[in-house]
Image (cartoon, rainbow over all chains, first blue to last red; front, side):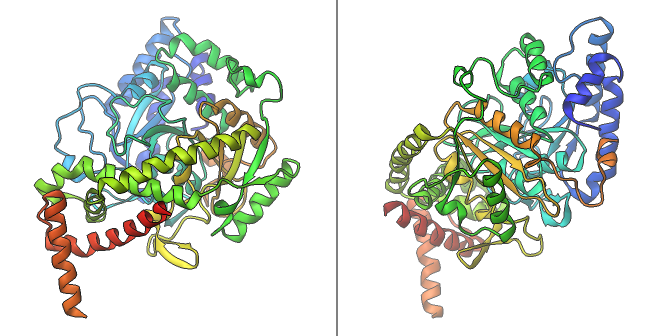
Length: 473
Length: 48
C-alpha cells in the first residue's frame, strides 16, 4: 500500500479497484498485526462491502469521493454500526451494538474511504501508553520492544507499519500527538470542537477531540478536509484540486493571502525545552536554524497549566465513570480504575480552581499569538520507552510513562489549540514536534508542515527493517 | 510505620465512602493512594 492520495488517485482513475486495495490491506493486517497488536477487531465483511460500493460508483461513471478506496482504521471508541464500542474496556465487550456509525466514519465513508479495523487503546483513553489489560500492549513498529504511545496507539501503529495509510484516533491530553511522535507518523489535534464528536465514546468533555493519523502532510490535509465537511462529496473536487496542486492551505482563510502562508514562527522555550534528550534538543536547534534563526518564546505558567489539565482530566473522567466504579470496580483495568477513583475524589473547589486558571492561561497564549502565527515545540522529549521499563525521566526522576508521556502535549490541549504532530526526518527511533496554532489556525499549520516536509526537515521515517519499496508494496 | 500505613488505608477507604459513596475494594487502596498523592501535588501547583 502507498499513501492515501496515491491509492485514491489509482482508484479514481480506474487503475486499481477498491476491492483489490481492501484485500491487500486485510492481508497486511493478517501478516503484520500478530507482532504489533494494533488491531482489536478486523472488519473484513464491512471493508469488502464498502470497497464493492466504491467500485460500483466507478463502474456507473460517478465520483466515488476524494478518498476513494482508501483503507483506514478507527480507535475502538468510535461507534461502528453493528458492533459494541468497547473504548478499550473488557467490560464493554458485550455492550449493545452501535445503531449507527460515528459521524466521522459517516463522512469518511461518503468520501469513499473503506473501514477495515478497530484499533487498540488505553482503557477509556486514560493513558499515554496503550497498555491494556484486556487487549494487550501495542508495540512500536520501529522497535517491537518499545511502546507505541497512547491512548490512540493502535491507530498510530497501523499507519506506521503500513497496514493502512490513514487512521482515526482521539486526543484529550495528547492521545493523538504522543503516539504519532513515538511511531513516526503525522497526527492532527484540531481546534477544540473543530471535528465531529457524535458517536465517539467520551472521556473528558472539556478537552476531547478526534484527530487523524497519516503518513504525509498531503494525506493529513485531505482527511482533515473530509472530516470537517458534513457533505464530503460536495467538496470532493475542491479538496482534490487543492492537494493535487500541492496547496495544503485553505483558500477560505483570508489571513493566508498576504504572505507565504507560513506566517511568523517561534520556538517554545521554558518548560518545553526541559527534560529533552540530546537528540531532541539538537533536532529542535537544527529546525530553528532551518527556519532562519527563529525566536524562542516562553508561554508563562506552563507547569501550572499541565497540572490544571491533569486535575480536570482526573475529576471529569472519575465523575463520568463513578456509577460503573460503584457497581463493578473490579471489572476495570486496574491501572485505569485506581486513577479514576482518585479523580472522582477530587473536591469540586480544586476542579473549579483548575478551570479558572485555564482562563488566565488562555489569555496569555492569546497575547503570544498576537506576535506569532505558529509555535514549535517537542511532542515527547525522548524516544519511545521500553515496554519492560515503561518510564520517562522528569527532572531527574523516573516516572510512569502511562501518566507522563503527555507532559508536553497536555498544556496545549488544555486551552483547545490546534496542533499538528510531525515526525522529524531522521535516522533511528522516531521523534516528533508539535506545530501549534491559534484556535481556528489549522491552515497555518498545514502550510508550515508542507514547507518543512518539502525541505526534508520532517517526514515519515521507515520502521526498522523496512524499505520504502516494502512500505509502498 | 505499619500502624501509620494501616491508618492510611482506613482513612482512604473512609474518604472514598464519604466523598463518592464507593466501597473501596482492598485491591484498590494502594493504587488510589498513589494517585491521590500525585493529584495533591498537581492541586498544590494549580493553587500556586
